[in-house]
Length: 634
Image (cartoon, rainbow, N blue to C red; front, top):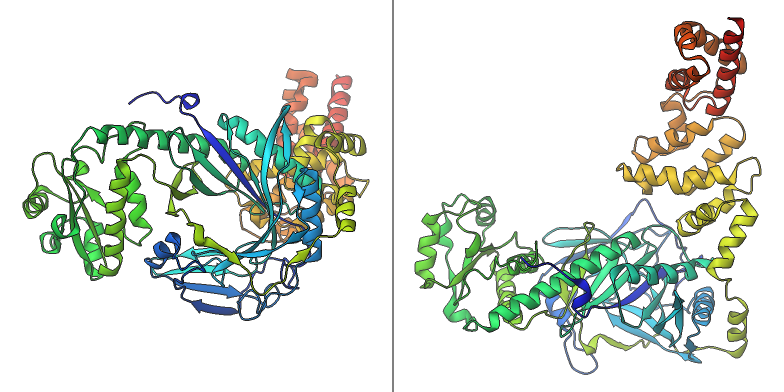
């Protein structure tokens, strides 16, 4: 296994930033941009493949049809209407969304077109009820500056966001329609050569420019990065759905390593005599051989009425498990592929006997396939309607392995890797929208957009420092967080320390999230409510973390419930004095032994019983006074 050198492979990366715009209404209707909690409407759809205006079928559509999935949509009239259900034509384009995208395009020094045409972009995973996404090219060209270098802008587009996926089974895929139609800006950057940390800096700079407008949504899921990655001599791979900036480096590094690993595999295959797989000759039904096998995967498939097939690959022995870099194997790539056809997985000869498949099954398979010593084979089980397209894709994938990196679309994983999603779309993916006339951009609109260009990031940070008396590090954390708008709302109450608010929003909540608690459960209005109670003297500073922890763990939804459940009740001054007197008297030995340093252990004891009920600073002051009095008496 060789050492991977990312700076020696000709890495190129292109970023596409998708950011929700902060408008009150959706892009093509008057529905509010809110997230529903209940979905009383349920709709079932089946997508079918249709030819484009050029008379061609898109390869991604053909691939998706082969899965034969039923799409289930959940809707709520409060957040979606007949437009989202594709039962009514789109309305006029949202004027606010148009104005915001003109401001951002102007800030990027991009050339704005005086006439914008709405296009339909084919979408084949069911995330749009119509089977397409409406998108419009607003401008081209321009740049952003990162560390003194100009990074070119390819295009700026305004489009509608897709439906929110709720779940998926082998036969169905479920979406909620509340997110469908929310205005979205797409900014495509020119591909650049650089290391993953440099690419992350570019994404961070562009994200900061967008946030500086105060016209974009904040929070997880409101911004997504698609990443186009290629290495020297290879195809471009599109990676969808990088939601967290912290994952971007890992994903680029993994994908670069995967592509270079596949190129290494291809180089090895070029020196081997490998015939193309012929279905009639090399694919056999071996169901009877596996009737009594111990593999749980195969037995479950057989109970569901599946068949088992084996594929012969001449002179391929050892190539499925060949690993140029750790975790980069052709067997793994093919395993990813078949799972998207609803199949449980695939077994290859390099890893057998194993997984409940024994020599008693392998020998008959070898005989049925008429294998020679250097031949390899694959085994997969499933319904015939799923097996056939899966086998076709496997045959193509093995052919592609001889070339290197096949052009495909992949999805980012939470672990910082990528998995196969679908083939790359063809040229017949985009066609004109016939329901919406061209949108004119006027000279006054362009002049207004120029006036609305936001301050630079440096100026914005400086304003935060001065307005709220924050140090630079904390100001940057606030600005880069999902809570910058919430921070300003809370800090309108002058009784609350902005530094404390910033430390909670950017530190406490993040730490709770790292502990595995769910930040989505903590709603903005509950955060504001907690700080209001603090300002009113109803709770102590230490209560904030306890309350948020209770909500983020799912034990309750509301601040009032959390306070009641964890018994955060305010102690009156007289009771506090009595409790601390008892504490001091009970620990005189520690005071005599440690003197003024005894404040630390006594504080620890006090906070165990009064944490969240009294401000820790107040407890410290009273304890310090009482300890000094006792020492003076002696």
